[in-house]
Image (cartoon, rainbow, N blue to C red; front, side, top):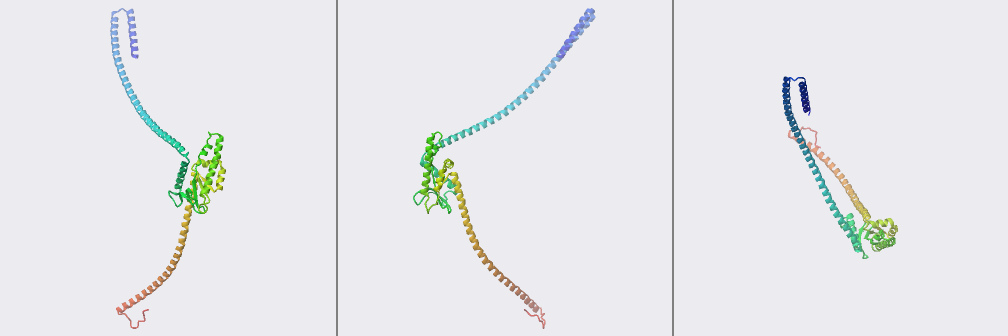
Length: 358
C-alpha cells in the first residue's frame, strides 16, 4: 500500500509540473521532454506494478504455507487430544460397566438373601422346626469349642436315667459334674409383645404369656435334667436368639431371679460359647495339673534311683582307686624285675650286692 501511495503522489507531481511548464512556456522542447519523462514514469510505474505483484504473490504463498503448517499442527494436536480423551472415556465407561455389573450381582444377592430371610421366618413359625434350629445351633457351638464328636467332654441327644433326652450333656470337672443343656425358643409371644403395630393391650397380654412360657421352660428343665446323684445341681437353658436373651436381661429381671432359684442358667449363643470356653480351659488346666502331679511322682522315684546309683558309683570309684594303686605298685615291681634281668644278662652282678627285690 505504501508503494501505491508513493506512486500516485509521483504521478500527481508530474502532472502539476506539466501544467506549470505548459502555462509558462509553450516551448515544444519542454513539451517533448515532459513527454519523455511521462513515458519513463509510466514505464517505471509498470515495472513497479510487476515487482509489487511478484512480491505480493510470494508473500501470499509464504503466508499460505505458514497457515497450512499451523493447520496441520493444530489438526495433529486435536487428533492426539481426541485419542487421549477417547481412551480415558473408554476406560471410564468400562469401569462404569464393571461397577454396574457388581451392583447388579449385589442386588441379586440381596434379593436372594431377602427371600431366604422370609423363608427362614416362615420356617421358624413352626415349633418343631424352631426346636430343630435350636438343636443345630447348639451342636455347632459345642463342636466349635470342644471339637467335633468329642464324646469325652460332651454328647448330644443323651438319654438320662429318668427316660428324658437332653439336647446335650456336658461332662464338666468336679465339683460341677455332668451338666444338661436344653434348647428352647419362645418366639410367638415375643414377636407379638415387641410388635409396635399391635395395640398396647395385645402387647401387654403377649408379654404376660411370654413370661409364662419362659417359666414353663425353666420348670421343665429343672424337673427333667437335674437328677440327684447323676447330674450337677444346675442345668443350662439355651436361647438360640440373642434378641430374646437381651429382652429378658434388659426388661425381665424377675425371670432371671426365677431361673436362679431353680438353678437354671439362661444363655444365648454368645454367652454359651463364653461359658463353654471357660469350662474347656478349666478342663485343660486340670488335665495339665494331673499330669504335673504324675511327673512330680516320677521325678521323686527317679531321685531315689539316682541316689542309689550315686552310692554304688562311689563304692565302685573307691575300688577303682584301690585297683589303680595296686596296678601302679605292680608296675614298679615289674620295672625292678626287668632291670635285674637286664643286669643278669649283662653279667654285672656284684658278689656282695646288697640290693634286694622288694
